[in-house]
Image: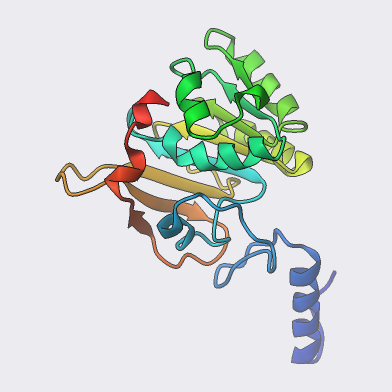
Length: 224
């Protein structure tokens, strides 16, 4: 569709049509995907700074954390609880430790709707499994580092096609231009509260670059 024309009104009409017909179109100054609500993270302060007021409903989400056991999985417990209670499947790919079923059950997650690919599979097979699962599972969580932008693009396309969410826990910032959202989890070390969640990249309007969550929210995170 051409947006060229002799009158400014024609250009604006064409732009408005694009924004209406393509909900994933990225606009830097306001929220992309008007009317498309995100999935609540379960943490109101975090919802308050995210463009869709929650996790993106589909696409690639990266969570950067410098080391394991920082409470990164606790961020997703409310999401897993919501999806499994709706009868949706959740796949874990190569978790660093085996999921602790009693803690997940106590948190309200239906473990009958969880699948796990244990560590030890080849990278090629892990990525193949993720791509296939994103077309049938609502949420795929993986622990992989150093993936190329080409691979991340394929995961993003698979997630969009399958109307699913791919979550990658990584130790470094990939700089990938295809992810719908990239967050960094960190602790200040001052003993004054819980972790800080910083937005490294987001599609849509960013109200604030970061927020600090209460330490009580992450109590027992290592157990899960």
